[in-house]
Image 1 (spheres, one colour):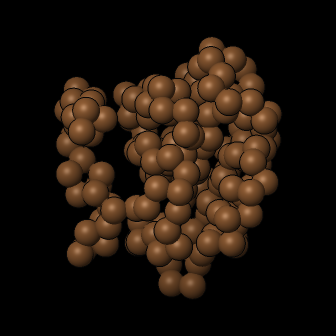
Image 2: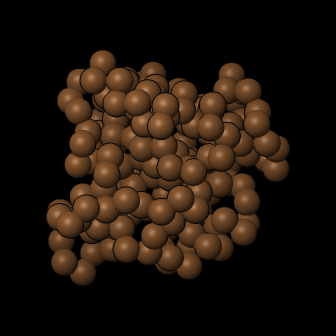
Image 3: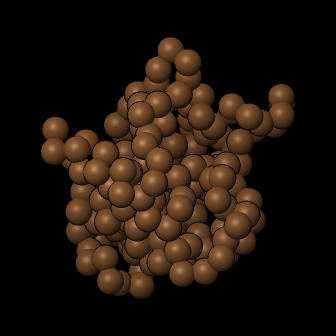
Length: 164
């Protein structure tokens, strides 16, 4: 993760740190993330994350595989996809301007999470943990700079990105 994330600061009052929520069960990743984002809130379970999502956040970073397991099925209730289901099955207007980053290394599950969120009207980007942000000269992310409007266009753009 890059410590210079222009999307986290743009549009925020001067002096106010962005509100960042980080869901991950790996203490090493949390240590790295929190070193770069010291004001972030780290949660390790679906329940903790959903409790925190009652509040407004500027960014939410979601892992899929929790509890020390890897490559778990998306239908389990103890994985990041459960947070996505919770977000998408109810009205959460206070989170519609939130930027969601899916940082799982489980590409299949991360892709499903991202597509579900985009299809439900959220801004979501799939970026496995440790992958650098691609920022343009204007401070926008690569995804933001070329982000099409509408679910079908977003889906096609996402599929093109994964086909590369």
